[in-house]
Length: 606
Image (cartoon, rainbow, N blue to C red; front, side):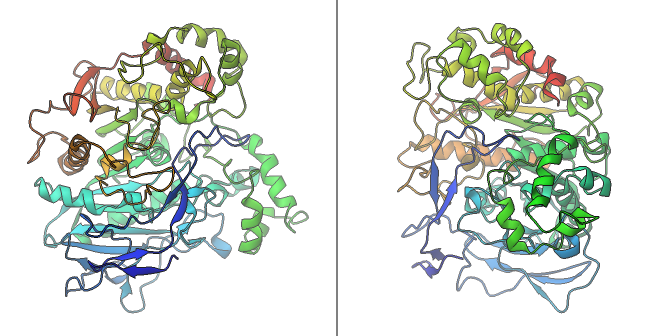
């Protein structure tokens, strides 16, 4: 852990900065995805008089009471933060530690009572992962913990609950990440008259949570990381009432792989309703996966290679043998480019019953209201550079480093759907006109390629989900985030992950550092940026509270209502540089290309 000191306001600040990557973090089975942004130096941003303290360092001298709750396993004590009038319960276990005999097994419920009062005042280590988001944070196999942030003074009421599932490609990330500070959105919920409780949950990552092979499938321990999340949701149904939460008003919410996780729970068990949540929020992720599903047979050589690097080669039960390999040994093996990011969920006929494009077509999903959106330039995070010719584009389509590769016979259809005409590549963009010349190393046809890769990974399935919800008479609120934060060059545009700081109302830039390639997204920006963050964060809180993102106290004057998608297939566009911070638009851009992708979902194996 970084060494900390107390600033003049009594809040602990770390001396060390922590290297983390911006979340351009989806990688393919065959190897690393194209990564367009450099390593970002992230740490706790120190301000002489911070507008908003971070609850990631423990405060000193605030409050005199110790909040306690009694759940099924015993009594838990938390900590009170007077600056926000909030109670924190951090590092609360929701499963038995997945170590030893429980390594590479589905999560197990806690079946014992606490010995005395459990002190829950600091974050647990992050789950073991292999990416920049883990750097500077402690990691451990023993990582299945959650955090509860509640507004104080509502102990005798029953508040709606927003459950945050972090992203990171299912191979990195964690609830400790300062960029996911829940205090701000919980505080906003109180200010707008719609108080909510914020919860963040951890889950096993990379091979620790998504090891796949015939041995794994045969043992029934597939997709363990998703089952971790599912067990946390069951735990909340049993226990969140003790914290003042309403079990019937739970919204699950995530970004990137976290949003995809929300989609997996909406379609889990072929759409079975286990009564775990009443709504979902998906930021750049959808019920239809962002990647091509691989089979157990395709994963088998990777599993065999892991076994070959241990002393388990001659074991009768190699999976059981791997459970007893020392952590340091196994961690060293997995922390290589051969294994670190390649394991992803599979269709196991159970929690992932089948390809979800089929489920959406048949209406086999939970009929719960959703927010589902994406950023204008998602493709700059997921597509390759060096696209100078049509042939370069064709080669990239079927490259095995692609998130969603497709066979060469489909190339003519894609080229026709994404013609070499700029107006067909992008929504209206006064910042980047059609005649712009991209610098090296992007290439003359980079924008065309980026449009396709953004659609095939994120945007097309966002539109497809909203269409499926509308066809089934279920409310969907769709958005396009169109605000370039500080620190990003124009050629990257409004790329993946950039809405997160706005949704969390993280206007102090906690987790970002201006001295390096990741800066406070609001640095040197106009007041409209902070106003947009307030509007977006409050809209999210309002939706969690009563499923309506519009009717809350203090809503930015003159802002049009966020339309339900069924009202003319419209998005709300979030744009701090426009005349209005938010405005509706027809969801018709790149119509032929997106329709082609949706119509060929099975060719993408999803």
